[in-house]
Image (tube, rainbow, N blue to C red; front, side, top):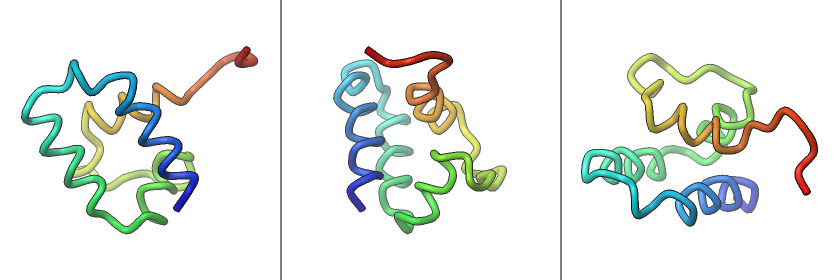
Length: 71
């Protein structure tokens, strides 16, 4: 799914060097989920289940949350 590629790719491009081994494992697990499910969480269409509502997922969501225009 192109939208998911853009969202996840932007985060990975910007933050990959700072991710721990645990974060990388979790990122891989997120990427194994169905695209529509993950995109729904990232876009705010649904709340992730408690076991997926982690610091990494919150960081990915926050990375794409903006209060103003993007220039």
